[in-house]
Structures are given as C-alpha cells and as structure tokens.
Length: 162
Picture 1 (cartoon, one colour):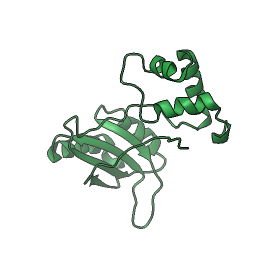
Picture 2 (tube, helix red, strand yellow):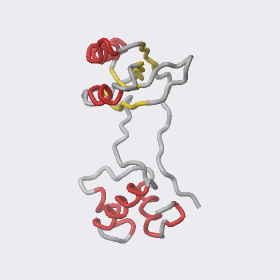
Picture 3 (tube, one colour):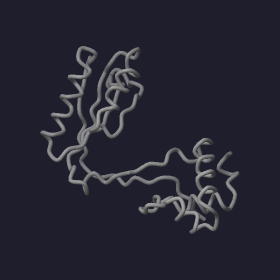
Picture 4 (tube, rainbow, N blue to C red):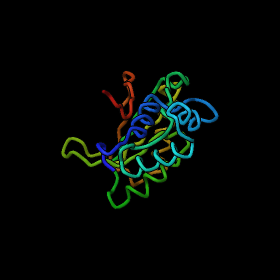
C-alpha cells in the first residue's frame, strides 16, 4: 500500500484519527461510527496502514507538562556499538524512560549513539534518573550528557489535507 492507494474509507479513518483517537472506552468503535463502518474494519485498515508504513504508530502522546513533569532531559550516551542494542533494551525497560533509541554518531562533534528521554518534577529528579541510567550502564559509558527541553514542541501525526 502506498499513500496514493488509500481509498475513501482509509482517508476518512486517517482524517478521523489525525488529531488522536477519541478518549473513550471504545475509541475504535467511535471512529467506526464516525466514518460509517464497523469497529473491526477500522482496526483491520489501521493495521494494514501500520504494516505498510502509511501510519508509523498508534500510541499515546502525553503532555508531560500537564502531568506536572515540567523538567525534561534527553540523556545521551556514547557506548560501544556492539553493546548499544542490549544496553538500550535495559534502559528502555526502565519505567521512567519514555523513549529510548539508537542514533548514528556525528563525529567528531557528537559521539553519542544512545538516547533516552526522562521527565521529572524538578531538575534534581531528572538528574537522579540520569544517575540511575549511568549506574545501569556502568563502565560501558565512554561519554554522556543531558539536553534539557527549553520549550514545548507541538507533536502531530499524519495529516490529510484537501
């Protein structure tokens, strides 16, 4: 499936969900009612769009600030490439890490290849979480830093216009 092969119902489903799924106990049924099909059809079609890469993911995007987590830091780590996947899985499993991923280095200025986002109610809380990650990584750390958020960026997904 390519973007150009979306039929009218696919486009209606994307339009109905592009601002997020309804915050109800039955979000897929609610989308189905809005677009004129049944819940199973919405789930099947979204699954196909996910599989084809038309839709990258379906997930919650919390507003950390509204949850009281006003301090946000992207921890960055330089670890051996042979260990980055294993170590990333350990970090990603921590309940306070909201996302964790591998990225290529940009040497010589940017040696980091492992990223993990943490949130807290204070800078001290974020630093404590960073220290916990450092303890977990131990001697695998060759370099590390933390980048603090200075503003909120609007997060949006797929948009259909016209």
